[in-house]
Image (tube, rainbow, N blue to C red; front, side, top):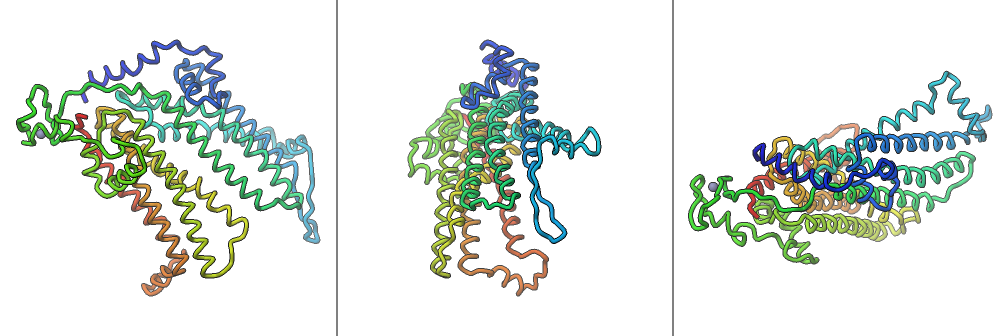
Amino acid sequence: MDETQADSLEDNLTTTSVLSDAPSFRHVLAAPWMIMRPQRAAVQMTDGTRWAFWLSFVAGILVLALLVVVLVMWDETVGYSWSEQYSRQHFQRSFGAVWQDWHADGYFGHAEQLFLLVGILTPIATAVGAWLFLPNVHRGGRGWQSYKRVYRAVASGVGLLITFTFIIGAPMVVAINIEERGDYVEPTLVMLFVIFCLGCACVLVYWLIQATHAVAGADVPIELPPRCEGCGYDLTHRPSDERCPECGLDTSQSLEPDLCRPGCKWQACEDFVSWLSTTIAVIVSPTRFFRALKLRVLTQPADRFAQWNYLAIGVYTVCVCFVIFLIMFARFGDSPDSVVCFLPAVFFFLVPLICWTVHRIVGATVTSWFIVRQLLPDGRWAKTVMAYETAYLWVFCVYTSLLFLSFVLFEDWMSTIARVWSYRGLMPIELIVLPVSNMLLGLLWFWRYGIAYRNIRWSNY
Ligand SMILES: [Zn+2]
């Protein structure tokens, strides 16, 4: 893409925010607290002046840091010590006593250190989060402009972060204090709480997805000259019944939508069968899939495809858990205890969250490369590829679950083989094979993105 094209695209994107009235200072300050309206919060933070944004964000960080300090102090109000007879004795003290204890060595005590730590980590975490969400926002032009927008959108989530820190932190401190007094917290309650925390993490992710989509440029088609799908040669004013002068490919293969980009099944119809066949097509033959994918269409169907994949992965994980329970029950006859019964619910949230993180890290790395090298004319193409590539997560999930099933069925078969090969490492071989093989699958993903890129870069439809 040449410079003038990039500039005109950027102008188009920025006019949307120039035309709408800039939100008042008060509105920007209140934006992070609109926790029920992610889109509105993000737009107000993004459209506000630089001063208003930073004031609003820093105010949020201060509240968060203060909350963390108060929570940790509250936790410290109950403690225990060991007497000479090795019996545990708990003690209770006031906030004032904790404060004095923390400042025994001077003015810069634990409270200030903690405050500073939260104050530094929150903007850093926001920067990392913004990078992960960059593919949602970038349309064209300079990557830095998109990054600044997405940073503000992610920063608008500070209000929700404070809310979750409070509703998760407060019960946690209460529970820890009960334990420290020597009382007993019901394990079932602990498990339910873990599930609740994971649910909150999913809500935060969903919130940020909504927020970042709201500050993306408008989903309008961009005007680009028709290109040869084989080599990128400009086919303006060329009839569709000759050959490309550069590579000899029939121009009809590039110019007739039904011939070159008929689209995938999911783009034709969004139902279970299409989802399944599209997922398989992405995994099995990425070249053919991305060669046929329509890129210059709305991105929402691709987003829905990704959402269905995450949901299906959650359901799959629950099914795998129950299969493992059944095998354990058939083999050893003992039914799992009440705490284990919660594991499927934990994994229902945890596994899609891990998948989402891995998918985002790989996708954001690839997208950053596309942006820096200006490899694609439209950022939405990368976003669409990323959304369909969620299908590849199934390779990780099925592989890992089969490995776990094999451990349940054949126990330490891997260690046995490793012993035969005279493996004498400190760690059990399973703990090495599992992460290393998954990491190799992750590396394979970059190669897949390379295939996708080569098959979409000159897309005309
Ligand atoms: Zn050509």
